[in-house]
Every structure is written in C-alpha cells, then in structure tokens.
Length: 248
Ligand SMILES: [Zn+2]
Image (cartoon, rainbow, N blue to C red; front, side):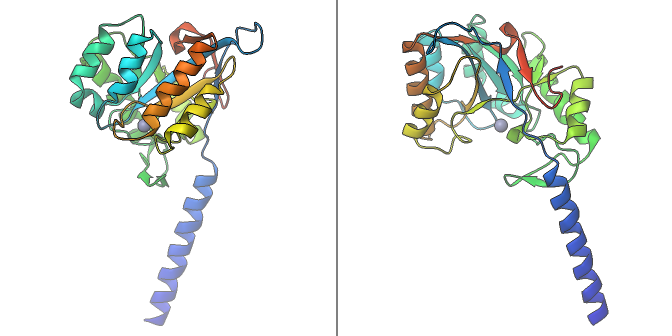
C-alpha cells in the first residue's frame, strides 16, 4: 500500500513537472502595425476586440459606429450564434468592422494538455486544428469574407500550434497593448492604458462583457485617442508585423 502510494505520488509529481515544462514554452506573441511615423502624439493604431462568448457590449459597439472608429473583431462560433443582432450591425458597416477568427469554441490553441488562466487547452494538434477550422467555418456560415487572421483563446500558443495555424493559412494576431486585462480592469485603468497607445500599437480589449466596468474605459480611451488625432486601422488594412513566426 505504502509503495503504491509512493509510486502514485511520484507519478503525480512527474505529471506536474511535465505540465510545468510545457507551460514554460507557451508564447504570447506581439503584433504591431507599420507606424505612420509623423509627429509625436499622432500616428495609427489597430484596435482589436475579442468576442469570446457571452453577449455584446453595446456601449463599445455604439461608440465605434457613432465615432466611425474601425476595429477588427475576433469572434468565436459560440459568440456568433448568440449575437445575431450585433453581427448584423457589424455587417451593415463593412467600412468599420472586420470580423476575424477567435476559434470555434474558445479553446486555447495549445497542443499539449494544460490549463491557461483556468481554461483547458485544446491538448492535441488535432484539437487545435478543429478549433481553428470550426471558427473559420462559423464565420463563413454567418456570411461575409473568409477570415485571414486567427487569435486563440487566452492569446497564448505552443510554438508547434503557431506553425500549424500558419500552415492552415492564417496569420496570428498578437497585440502590443493589453487594454482591459481580459476585461477585468476598472474603467479608469482601462482608459489610461488605451489612451497611452502609440503609433504602430495593436490594442486588445473585449466587446463581450457588457456588465464589466472595463467596457466604459474602452470607450473613454478610444475617444481620447481619437481626440489626439490618432488614426485607427484594421488588421487587413495594415502591414501587421508579429514575432514568434506569427505573420512572416
Ligand atoms: Zn477570447
């Protein structure tokens, strides 16, 4: 009995070590757009908003439409199914909204079994492929152009998953400004982070948490950037340059 318990403990320890080892190899790639390179304070930034699941933050959606701020929206299959009204608004403004692939079921594109921010990874190459392809299929089913960019849930990847996603034909959308801390930051801090974006930055925030204070900060930060004379570009309209082999 004692021996069995010991060997189980050893097994658990080695599993823990294996998963810790894998966790260390995860990448959170960055992405920048080509800077406009004019005077200080102005320039261009790309706003990317994730729609992971849940609902639509209409504070943000309305502000984008009212102020004519273009954005790249990363949507999952789950979100698309539940937010037909928001999708319709986005489709009605093709000059403002570019819809891209955030996966079919919001499962991290990591091909080894582990948890990232408490979310279970896809866990195998096949499961990563299924997540990417089901996300693209959901977008195709909702009409509109085929997605060219992919961002996995949690925006973290194993290097081999990055290579596979590239082979599937997608560029991978990292970011350079974490605007809302996974939608968990307060309004003030979110606004401060977004308003501080510089020429060439790619901002990430969320458009699927209408009850979070962060959404209010997203709007304030964007309006501050617009006021400063910053131009907004979508990923398709800019040369996005990422590291870790995500765009080249
Ligand atoms: Zn997400």
